[in-house]
Length: 65
Image 1 (cartoon, rainbow, N blue to C red):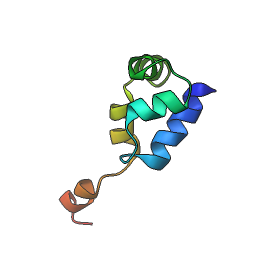
Image 2: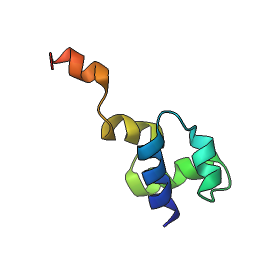
Image 3: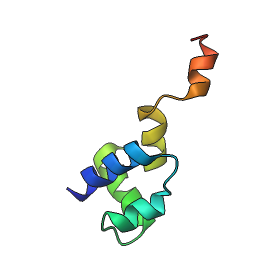
Image 4: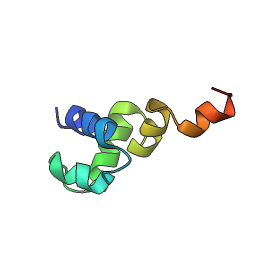
């Protein structure tokens, strides 16, 4: 439940909210705790997950969109 809340918060607020703040709001002991949970449940860190989950404007420019 805590992981899902953090995931949704990161998806909605990123890149404007630091991962450490997301960790604190969602009840993690610290950012490392959030990172370990992400690694275990999503298979990657929050930063990597966001890079894969959210499209980048640079990605669109690279393909001519």
